[in-house]
Length: 505
Image (cartoon, rainbow, N blue to C red; front, top):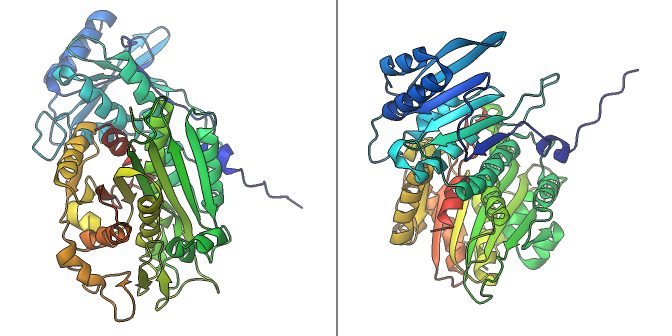
């Protein structure tokens, strides 16, 4: 008789001491066994020449001189005797051409070229004249290259990867690098949450991870509204979506209050869709359509990661920050909500269900309504893997924005370019588009009648409608990042850096 090994706990898997990506504000360590030099042509040639002089390896400088960046970057590796072995030196040349919708340092190519960098590598990024702003984008890009989650047996523990930055011979701001280290760590935790399988990550275990990661962080408060209490309090959308699952739905309300903040000052708020598994409900997905639906909580993971990184670095100066995680598993069973049900949402609006697989907007509708009713905020960002149409509209490199304020919309596009998490605006036109949700028997249906009529905007506007019903008059930005949250069957952590930067605007 063989007893199967017990399933490890979520904290053992997601919060284990995995090899880290460590940022350094000091000079590069060229003496490590594995070195990777990264930059656009001029910056790469400069650090390659510096390496060649200090290590006595002229071939590295010559290799950089003859390399061409190609359209998506290029990579070359050479070896040099070191002690009794060989030192591996890899050169990554990024394209030097960018246009108005890309980061000037071509951060998209940095991630793809550095992806899977081996443990023990010293990565040296040449930021050239771009200076400190490029340091953040480069750190975020490299954070995404080594996802931590794995259930493979017998995998060896690798060493940490160290990343240093060179800016025309100078070193980056040390306090900036210290802050970015928290962001890098949080991005990698967000990746692990998204990659975790649904047997491991559910609304209950998700809360365990949140509590553990924020344990001891100054100024943080955690409130959880759980299961039947959601229904009692009137959060009809979130409760309905998750009520059929063994692990009951939850609204997690995180708050960080910086030292010395004016208690009457308007706060900021994130709100994330956290569907830990999406079967589609009674409008059941196909086999192929259901695979990868463990990632349907990517918006909440990004919101949580941004919140955690900000809280651990003292928060947003002069601002209280809230983060709401709308957690549920859209399951099937005798208690599942049905097409034709009419739900009363927290906004007070009624919703006729015509697609149980359009559940994300229901949980977020309750989430933003809770913010509008109870939290003194003037800016709200909600983030979600909401629609497949997002990828059709703007592709996998760009989050889709639906925003009620011109200034915030423009600031988000600029912020996305700055941190390397790109985004692009879509129409905010409730007067035209909300008619897609007309119902004969309720205030709204939950899915559009015409899927070819600006579907991404419509989905965002469904959420906004519930916020608007509370009388909220502040700024709101919806980010649909369905196609950005994963690539090649691994989570990207998209959204954490975007929100981290946006909160500081």
